[in-house]
Image (cartoon, rainbow, N blue to C red; front, side, top):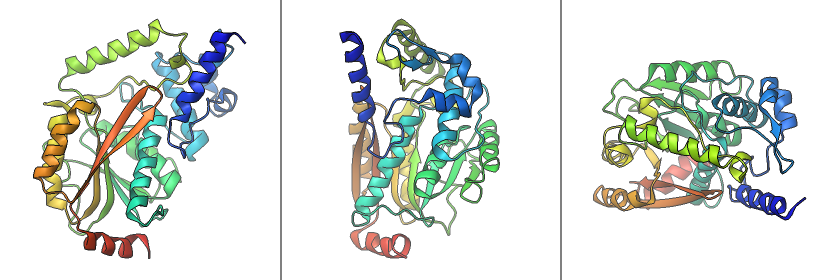
Length: 330
């Protein structure tokens, strides 16, 4: 192996090792196993000049089949598919969010992760892929409610649940009937949730989302011999509600914070991904004005990419102790 190849292999290893310690995707992909589970993937696998098996991560069909194989291999699925044009998520990064949420509950529960079916999680904008409920039920046995405003996404997510025994009776998909609401109309009066999570629409317009997608794809095609071809975190596709909204992610998160106050006693931790570091300050100011009792920013690293989510709670210390006794330590 040449010095360049050695350097690349070391870089890829370092990249994967930055994932959460419990992340199943810390090692390079085993394409022999993945192709045995999804034979259609085989035609997209090739050996690059560094003698590493990989796929062309700018090819949507190849990425879709890779995701399908990863979900079958690691999360107990027998079926997974999404409609053409839907967001095809980077699974290692999505898994990281779930594992760091487990750590958040661990911090709230005397350093013990509650691996219990009494834990209930609300996934805002679950999408056609239903990715967070898939990973969360498999890794921690949590129950999920996934919501979406898009009929096609609802139909796809429901089909994924119905076609997999591991998800039946653990994941419920609910239609959000109002495009102006996030929690209202979804959280019912008698319900409590230990976590909410959300991958918000990052962009403020279709034009902005398209430009970013084209730039990522062009950069990937220009650098096919780099580490990104081995384990790329990029994804393509996505419907309007998945990728953009008026005002972008800051506007969406501000609306989420404002609405979360209405359900302050029914949720232990509200959380949301924040794509841009420069947005944190305005989000934190909004949380301060909302009189939250706790606010945390959790950083996640996937190779050279750094992502983060913000978490907030309205519960007092006494409320949290009672929550632990009732829901974590039965």
